[in-house]
Length: 219
Image (cartoon, rainbow, N blue to C red):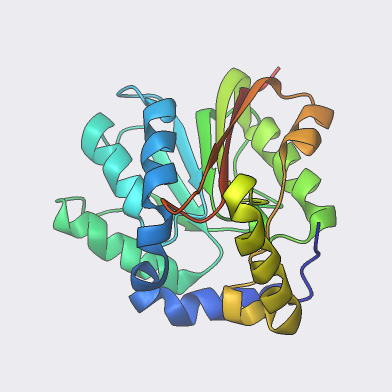
């Protein structure tokens, strides 16, 4: 697994600066896995829901539209992203978005605060040594048997292996040009941290970037 040679402050700046047009860069390549992840999420009204790295709020808006704002909260490292997400929610009639500026390595919530944690396309830009730290935070803020849904850029399979090889070569030349994202395989780390019932689905083959959806629950 490649590591991330970009400082957190640079990543924060890149995502804040690109927030206004970020969906133009990514939405088409993330839509299919995210739609499947929302099916697996199946959030029920009132469930305490945390989305880490809300980005422009596309997924968060869909979740609250289908299951309500009560009990939902979102965090992101980039203030610019949250500005776009707030505007999106205002269009849905949500004037006071329940968002917090926060680092995923130190979530500002007590233990067991949530029934479900959702995170998409973030762990692939976290330094390798910090991924277990972030996963441990997810486990900490989940209640016992709380659900975890992760969506990550991952190693290409089958016909996607050549795409992944090219991505990694481009990443080694200029990681910021790719938003500091590189392929990751998170299941072994999640298993090591004690998450149970882990299941992994792979998406790609022209329908999306090579992507893994990993679901499980806290012990």
